[in-house]
Image 1: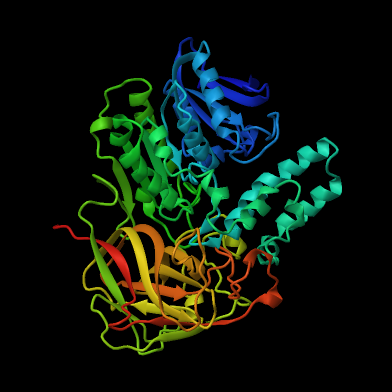
Image 2: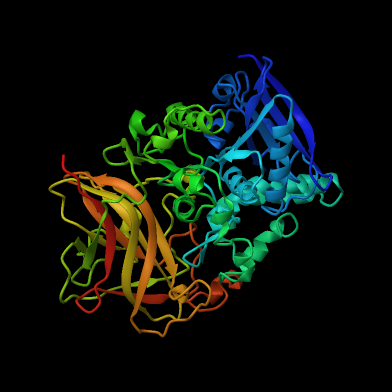
Length: 592
């Protein structure tokens, strides 16, 4: 391939700070559309061209750059402000709007540019796209954000629970460079770097360290970590960075790419739906496309140790990146080159249906023909463990016993997948076998009989629980599981609610011990066909650690509490005619 590579072009921003930028463009003379990506992960080691040893950028940005340049595009890759070769100080998300606008204007004005600019990339790169688009740069024509945090910035809570594994995993990739830069300026010592290296080398120790605020290696390089912990309620600190009306400021087409096992799936789906409803132009509202595959965060090629989705899913193959490259090239060919290739007439939603492991095109998300069907929790009072008497049925239980378990934060249910304790799973959340944790007495399991016919569950999932507790605050978790005939219990999706936030995330209200409350828990979304002979299982518990932090059960400030502050909670799940606990499954029934 004939390509010109220009490295470390220092692009001036409006305040004089210069950002290090690499340009990859066709060698032949001409003016080409430009695709921009901006991230904090070091542009020098994350771009796949032949002969480059590190090809991680193929995973990082979910496209093959070589093919993109061959197709007649310029790719611009930039270290964000304060990272690696760029000048300035790094504060996550603070400057990404203005720096994105300035970078896009620069790219549009270059002699090799056609003046038409798009953006692409995963995770932070996706968020940087939204930030720039909200500011409405004149040359920006289309987006392709993948696996994105909220457009306003990272929100490290779900259902009111802090997400330590995700946060510490992120900081593990960001903080070392910050310490190095400080050391170069004489603001940090080699001992600081050594201490940080030791700390990040033992993830389990960092996850279990108490209190959560006791992370001395983060105090100087990542002060925002402590700000995040200081605001467990959704208060003005979060509202100012996460305006819910940002959709009206984005007026260009967007191709959203996500994964069923991705930690930011809910953000992607909400932003897709929000743009369709509130986008800043008729074009933006009409041209919102969505692709969801069987992927975890950034995991388009590695796959999973104990689950293959075959070539159709391409979860463990470069075929996934090749497919996404095709989709994105078609997207940009239309919006940046003006090619009439059918993009605007195509069905806007493309999803991978697990179980049958097939791709399918749909008219909208959620699917218009969805039937939201309640599956009720049943038991004789002993749903504890997968070998208990818990069942799941479309028929409501008239009379039933409550199920009881002790949640002890000293001994939480461990996350199996989703940035788990096991080093083999680090950074690789996915459909892991849950049988080991289903042996625990503090995990309630409600399971259907073996299915006589396949059942497709595609869409958002809600768990409605009637609960009481001995504590004034505790957590309740839910997990949807596909149980195979051989007993394998494959995680599909999960969720959590911190009981103090049952009324709202803004105003916590403690529980009255032993009073029965109705909780609504968002279990995310999935697309899975439970095949004949399989069983549908719901797990209910009160911890999923370190995906979520441990509730101390005291009603106090969890981030500052020590292990000695923890108290056990006796938690009850009620299910009868008066308290019909159930999970609402989005069922798809189609002839043939």
